[in-house]
Length: 338
Ligand SMILES: *Cc1c(COP(=O)(O)O)cnc(C)c1O
Image (cartoon, rainbow, N blue to C red; front, side, top):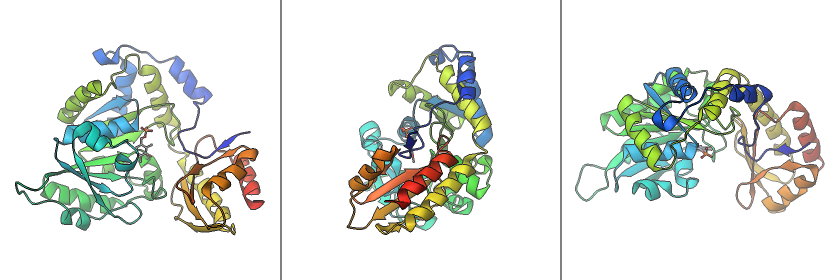
């Protein structure tokens, strides 16, 4: 038994998901002839109350297409210092769009409307044009923290006032929604674009959907092709996404419960110095000087437990669909003996 807690991307398609993939009706999606891709796009857009969707290979691509569609070279994107779009997309804001980021320091990844308003540049020739605000929900690097709907609304109000676009990196939006019990439509109504991942907690092998209005998606589709993301018989992957939306949303709470239990056990270990509050399916903690992250990971490895080094002294555990109660028990046992 291998217990892989490195990420919620490590899941393999279940039997039911594979069957749905086998049975998918497909066509060439660049010619817009794949009925299953179109079904997934329409279904996701409908779920969030947005006009249209665009199926892409990854969440990095949906985010980067959104940034490219919303900005011009030289523009500025406001995001948190911990943002995935800034830290983990290979410098894509500048590489793909020629734009730059202004980093805000939020409360565990969540910045306020006030911080946004304070950082919008006035319209002066020598200042960078602030064109886009991007929030992440949940915030990966900040331990899976999430925004309340009212925080997101307040930022939306500022964006409207200054005519700035508002993007959501919702790679784990369903984990946030599971906790807040808000409706996807309430989220969708606030944003100009939303990126939703199917390959994280939802358990699909690949794929993200970018959502927005008709005009935005028309431009985004063009950019997807330029970025090399126009896929042909992608309906096999889209079928996995449809299956995931139909079957894997209701169970996300189990991942959160298991992450919480892991957190409780880990927090009590003598060589653990601090831990970010466990709010969803991510556990991030810092080790005391006595133990390096690498040593910690190496001591778990012989028990077939894989975790992520999150810096020299930090470790990240992520729970997911393929992490069972049996695995949880074994992991806790091993941890307590360390
Ligand atoms: C995983 C992730 C993405 C997208 O990553 P891909 O691996 O490219 O699908 C985007 N944002 C956040 C917050 C993520 O955790």
